[in-house]
Image (cartoon, rainbow over all chains, first blue to last red):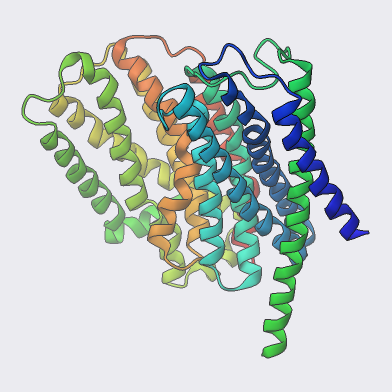
Length: 221
Length: 214
């Protein structure tokens, strides 16, 4: 069953790639119209990074309520993957910004907020590394993750809205409407779904791996 | 709790002295590197508020982590755990940090304004931003200080952990300070800054017991 699901996921993502290049139209009003295809990968990466963060926050709450080490491990792994996808989203975004805006980096509010969230993920992992005792590490990391959760809305929604931005509108724009070709939407949502599934798959693998490593360390003692 | 903090502080005067000295040194470095002419008027309102908040941020990072680190180092943390409820403790530490930050701002800001000859068009807004921003700095740092006190490599970890938390506050505070020096009304940023302060306080009160109690 598991192998079947993994193959299904690969097939799905392969279809997304095919769809991105042969099914969806390009955005004609862009400087380099073809560059708009990056939306099918860049945006889902940013979504996944955010999903990882929300998942980590949920696991952190569960840890603080139930004090089950498994939840703590899940939260830690989620942030690791969130950092990976966040870096990917930032890099793909920078490539696109170079093509469309002429500079890799220009402190657009969205670039600022993703950079801040990358710093947050890195800080979270640094905190985990600098506490040895597992129970204490879990407690402190969970508290820090939730502190991050409460300030995130300021970074992602409020600050970009009160400062000027060149970034294309998010999928649902400020007037609450979706203004995108339906074919672009199909591929984009399919890609988002695929990336979310990819996240949970990697998460599952990495959690099992870390559990094995811990058990081996415990057996050695 | 608050009174105890000040009594300890009064005995050593360590935090206040380092904080004031650190801020003053940074201030001198900043205004020295700007040169004798300073920044010209048109750029001044854009650049100088940023530098002011950077001075404040770094001074806070130099001085505030001590509040909890010292309890762990002198091993009085256990006694505190037994004698005070977490919320009383958090409020006490927060108030203490708040007085430190406000003292710092009162010392630094007038000097800064004099040395850089920055003119403030709306002083009331300026003062309000300093108060609200200072409160956010103190509240954010209090919880982060409680977290890092129990980890290794405390000093460096504080800057790493506090920066992502304080970044929205800094963006808002810089934006508003610019507005105040140029004479714009704050607009929507003022309530957002206050909302940030309220959020961080509530989060601190709720998360502190988890950080503090084993």
